[in-house]
Length: 117
Length: 109
Image 1 (cartoon, chains in turn green, cyan):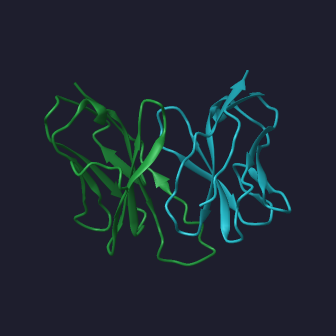
Image 2 (cartoon, chains in turn red, orange):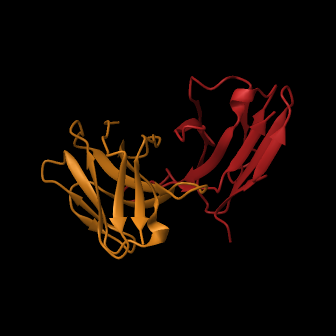
Image 3 (cartoon, helix red, strand yellow):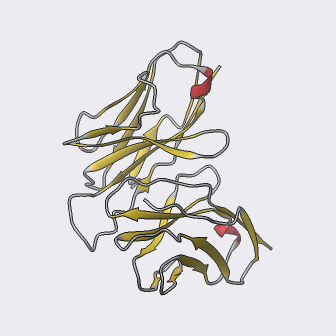
């Protein structure tokens, strides 16, 4: 069973459209994340979210919004897509609820390659 | 979280040990050293982490110097499937994971 699954794997869309990427984790983790990897391969955190707190990277445009219907899901909605949004988006999860010696390791999904044309 | 410095790229012969260095001279006492890797087109994968003592698991060994200002990730018998970008990350507990540029390891047949 896939621990962190993202859909779709590939997404091609036109500028100005609104799209969503879904993420689900079956690990029982309490925190989920979205990362963006651009063409230069830099991995940047966009959001971290648990049932208590949403932390937004201040550089993320407000066209991007995470939606979490429950602890196992964190979807990414993107409005008015721009060419610069083309990238690979990774979802991840971890468990922060338990103290040491937990390693707070992240489990990543396989990514969604978004191409805006 | 402390900054890390890694070589941009390294090569390793298949079957030999791959030793990937990382400098983290500004590390503080409560920061852990984490290693992740990203194989082409896949999501990053956790490898190992440590605080002070050397650590070993089924994937790799982590050697941390006594002053904790540097560490080395060791893949004891590198295979072609170990070709990836390896990230050394210093992090306090449950803080968010920030990735640098990493080391691109190429395992050569």
